[in-house]
Each structure stands twice: as structure tokens, then as C-alpha cells.
Image 1 (tube, one colour):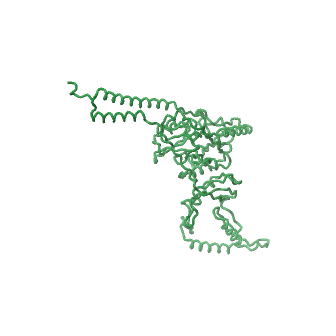
Image 2 (cartoon, chains in turn purple, yellow):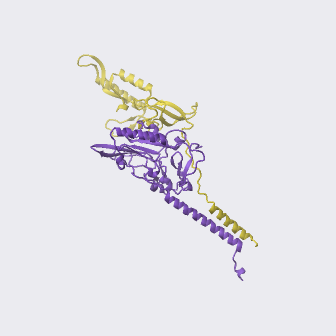
Image 3 (tube, helix red, strand yellow):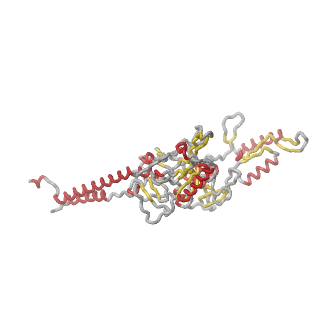
Amino acid sequence: MADTLTIKRTSGSASAFIPMDALRSSGPEYSKLVDISRCIGCKGCEVACKEWNELQSEPTANFGSYQSHKDLTPNTWLLMRFNEIEVGENLQWLIKKDACLHCEEPGCLYACPAPGAIVQYTNGIVDFNQENCIGCQYCVTGCPFDIPRYSARTKTVSKCNMCIDRVEAGLEPACVKTCPTNAISWGSKRDMLAKADKAVETLKQRGFQHATVYDPSGVGGTHMMYVVPHGDRLADYSLPTDPTASPAPLTALNFLKRIGAYLFGFSLVGALGHLLAFGQESPDEHE
Amino acid sequence: MAISRRTFIKASVAGAAGISALGFNLQPAQAAVRQLKIRNAKEYRTVCPYCAVGCGTIAYVHGSGGLNTTNTVIHVEGDPDSPINGGTLCPKGASQMQLAISPRLRHQPLLRRAGAADWEEVSWEEAMTWFARRFKDTRDATFEERDEQGNTVNRCTGIGWVGSATVSNEDAYLISKTMRAMGLVYYDHQARI
């Protein structure tokens, strides 16, 4: 299966830092677009995410916020963060849909040493394969957005997979489909960028001079973009202002790994050659 | 140079080790993608019961529908063809599969007796007898045939009734007719509370 999915990068392999060449021209790059100005905070997306991915519900208690849970967990891949911030004279909810942004240059994948545990497809989805995960949690450190969560019970790390099973079958992710206010939309990255630009223009006309599209270049752009009404207050939305991810350490590591492998091989071949050429040393031959 | 059997075996082992070191495959197995869980499910178009908006939904069902089979709901999501919601659902609607499969669903009536702190599970028979007795007594005590101006009103103001979002059309019709016939005026729906 998986005709519509072509692997671009795989963790723990050479293709992590040199993307695989697709044999066929790949399909569109998909992207979610979260227009924060349209969100009413109903959390329908959270429920749809739990329902589709069959994630267990987690009891929560009121901790003085409209937010459902305090943090993402291995069972909560999507959390609406309700940041209550004073903007001018008004108290505002700077809502953030906290889930994997599916970076074009994924820090988690670069950091992952387990072959095949993290895979990036040409359509932009970065997927975790728990059966290959070794539970080292390097991805947690490697992620500039603090998204992957480690489960001590399963000894693996989980995060949003952009409903890859749905996308593969031609459906939009569950959170996108359920959003009643069209705050989350889905389409090719190109179309979503155009839509985002239009939304920003409208916001600017309505007086949000700092409205902007959040598609950080430090990670090569993301496959979940935001339209941020108060673009000058990214930190208040709990959005990193300049996230970066680079395969440089991994490139060095892989280079050394290669050299080590070759050296090991050559030394064995050399030892074999010596054995065949000069034979086994024995006390008798010396006499 | 004569190669003894011992040397040959040693050479083979060394060679195999050398080849496996050089040919160490860093390329992992192809990542498998989870299959779409609704791929073989039957689709039933239905309507979300939770409020008056009436969002169209699709219930995905496993089971052949055969004589000996009870179908099982495996997933519910919005109906993209519905002009009401275009496939979207609010958090309540998105969780409505729980109506069918939740392990917390009650199958027995609960009764909290006068003065008791906790609910107790009772039989349907006991619940209905209790209910009928209380209903009749309250209605007899509070029924008004005429108001202060002498207009005929025939109303029962001592009882309120709250309908449920999860009853069927037919149930709702019966509830409505019965309660109106009893003269109830405080009559509302759970979705509006």
C-alpha cells in the first residue's frame, strides 16, 4: 500500500540528512493552516483527535484555565493552549493549537539514532513508528517546539502523525475536518500559503497591524502553519520566535560512523590477508 | 601454501565478519503505515442528537448486517455532504460515538431515596412504580383548572420535564404528547441547559 506516500527522510540512516530522490515526481506537499483569529476555543479538534486515533482519555481537573489539560502527553497529541494575555487594554485569549508542526527540516528526525523510527514523507508528514523506537528520547531534545512525549509505560515516544492513515486514503486529518469555524484548513502547502496571505491581509484591514503567517524558515517551513493576529507577540502564543533544526551534528556523526565501519572492515580484511599470506605463527616454524 | 581445515574455517569466519562490516546496511525497513480503520466499514448517514442545529454525521459500522450479526459502531464523524455543517462537528458531536459504545453507559435506572446521599441501582419495575406514584401525587396536588381571572388553563405547574438528546424521534414524540396531556408547562430539553 502507501502509493500516495513516498519516503523522503528516514531516521538513523543516510537519508536523514540527504533526502531520498523520489523515483516518481511526488504529489503535493500538504499543510494545515490554523487561523488563530477564527478559533473560538471549542476544542472539537482535541476530541476528534482522541476519537480518531483511539487515544485514551485522561482525567483532568480545573486548574484555573479554560485549557483542558496542562500539557501534551503520549496520549494527548493535540492540546489547545489558552494563554490569557493583556493586549492593550483588553484581556485576550491567545490560543495556540499545540501539536506537531511537521517541519520540513525535522529536528526530531535529525536527532533520532534508531533506523526507521522517524520517517518523513514527501507530502510533508513526519511520522513516528513506535515499533522501531528505542526510547532514547533524543527526538524530545531535538524538537524545537517541545512536542514529542515519552511514555514510561511503553518506553516509546509519541506525537501527532497528521492522521497519516487518513491522508494516505485521501482524507483530511480529523482535527481539520471537525473544526466548526474553519479555523483549521487543509490543502496543498501552496494553496494554504495563499489562503494565509489573504487572511493576514483581512486582519490588517481590521486593525491587526502585526498579523503574520507563522511558517518559520529556521526549520525549512512547517506543514502546520498559523495565521497569528498579534505577530509581534509570538512568545505569548507559546510559539518559538526563531526555531532551528539542522542536520549538521548528524552529518558529522554519520560520517564518523561510516569511517568507523570501513576501518573495522579493512582491519579484518587485512588480518585475513596476513593470515593467508604468512600463515599462522607457530613456535615450531621459528626454529 | 597448504591451507589446513582450521585455517580455512578461520578465514571464512573472518571474511564473513569483514563483509558484514563493510556491507552494514544503514537503510531501515520500509516504514509501514497504519491502515485506515474505516476502510471496510459501512456508512450510515445520521443526525447528531445533541442540539437543535442538527449536524449531519456518518456512522461507520462493522458487521454484515446479517440475521445473526449485531453491528458495531467503530467511528462517527461529520457528513461533508450535509448543508448544515459540511462535515464539521463540535466537541460534543465529535465524541458522539460514546453514545453507542461507552462503558459508562447506564443500563439500569438510578434512584436517590429521600435523605440518602448516594444513588442506588434499582429495577425498572421499582423505578416505574416509584415514579408513577410520585407523578400522580404531585399532579393531583398542583393541578390548576383555572387561573385567578377564571380562565380555563388546565395546567400542572408542580412538575418540570427535561427531554433527552439521546432519545429517538418516536420517544420524543411520545414524551411530548404524554407530558402535554398531563398539563405540564415547564417542559424543556437537556441540550439547552
